[in-house]
Each structure stands twice: as structure tokens, then as C-alpha cells.
Image (cartoon, rainbow, N blue to C red; front, side, top):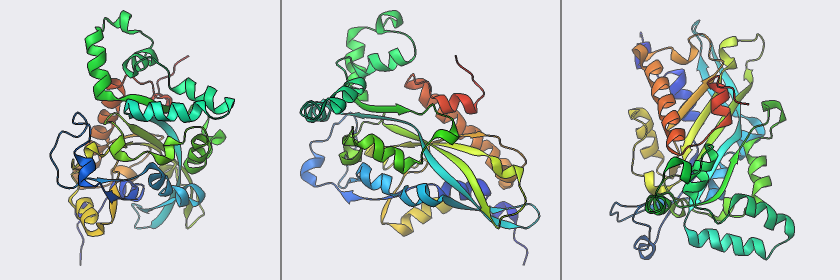
Length: 317
């Protein structure tokens, strides 16, 4: 029997499937659904599922320790499993003012180290001001009117926490270790729920290859590094960010969690055709589309993402 390679799952499909966290979810009580922020949850739903951030990080526990295995089909008919370790590349968490104030009060009642570090991330300026400042300008320089700031502030939410990794890959610790370290000062990284977060909340995960099985020769095609972008808010739970029917069917069959499919993707050191091997050019189109979405997302939030700039060859002083 001859199998049409264009109908097989490509290596890119396989990578995106294997590194997508499927998080244990819970149903929000109907009494709480009525109290949701309508700017963040404008659709009327009878059922809303959510996850806690602690459950999300748990998905990365084994991957952080041993790597995430991705089956790769080589052109010569060889099959191997490439392992990738996840690293926290960037994260921004926007929530309501009530949560920010609560966490600030908890920090103020703690020790000086926690209080000082919290104030670095959460000050009195609005989140729109913060985002503009990140891009090197103020609201005055940008000509933003106060009414516009208030409107954007309501829509974006209040910035509780942000982190952008700038260390060289060899100096980083795996994602789970980094989260545990950060959560000591920012407890919301464990306790917040996806329904508490605004649609502007997101994270980026850097995936670096470590080894493949069977081991032996070095394969340059497998030296590619990836940046995946994931939303953290329940606002997108009904939006199908992935048009792959097989992936959609897989999610329905599992029925036991929420899959955080990457909405954006960037690559580094991509060589050969391992990742664009099939589906009549569809992989190449998909890579370009996911890259474009990631770029647009960062521009909308006025964020300078160090790893993204490095992957794209943008060097900043």
C-alpha cells in the first residue's frame, strides 16, 4: 500500500502537537459567569471552562526535566525522536485591579525582598503607560489622550507580572524551575485562573534541541530552535486558533483538558527541508503565517521581545 506523503502528518504538525500543553480544566459555576468582565468575555455561554496557572505549569514539569519528545520522519525513511527542553522566554499577565491590589497588599505584609520586587512589576502607572514606556516613549510623546488611556486600560487589564528572558541559552534554567523561582515572589503565578486574565495575557516558550534517539550522527536539520506563543486567557477558549482537522479531532477525543495551541511561532537555525517536508507547500505557508501573527501580536502590545528579535536577526544595543 502506497501512502501519499501529502496526507501524512508533517514534522511541523508533529512538533506543534507534541509541545502543546493540554491543561486540566474545570467548569466555572454559573453564579461566577455572570460576574465576568464583559470586555474580556463578551459572548454568552452556558459553560465556561478554565484552568489555574499552577495546572498549566504542571504540564511542563516532565518536559523541563527530560525534554519533550517529537517523532521526526527523515527524507531517507528514517524515523527518530528529537527532544526539546522548554524555557520561559517571555510572559505578561494582565488581570483586574482587584487582583492586583490584593496581591500588592499580600506583598506589603511580607518581607522587604518580596515587597521591593513586587513594586518593580506593579506600580501606579497604567498598563498602557507601561506598554508605551517599554517601546521607548511616553503617552505624552505618543499623543495619547487620557480617555483613550482609560479605555485601553479597561480592555488590557492591569499588569500584574511580566518577565523577558535575556540570558544566553546555556545560562537559562528550564521553564518549570524558572516558574518556581518567580512564584516565590509573585504567588499569582500559581493561584490565578485563566478566567481572571485579560485577552492580552500571553507567554512565549523557547524550545532548544538537546538530543535525539537513536543517537549517533549529528543532523544539522535538527538544530532548529523554536519560539511558541500561547494565550493564557479563557477569552479565546471557543476560538479555533488551529485549522488542522486532525488536531481538532484529537482535542475532542481527549475531552479532558484545554489545549493551548500556539497562536504564533518563530524559528532559528532552520536548515534543510525537515520542517517543510510535505502538504504541497502548506508547511511553509503555515510557518510564515504563524510568524506574522507573532510579529503582529508583539507590535500591538508594543513589546520588545528579546528572543524574537534575536531569532529574526534584529540586534539592539
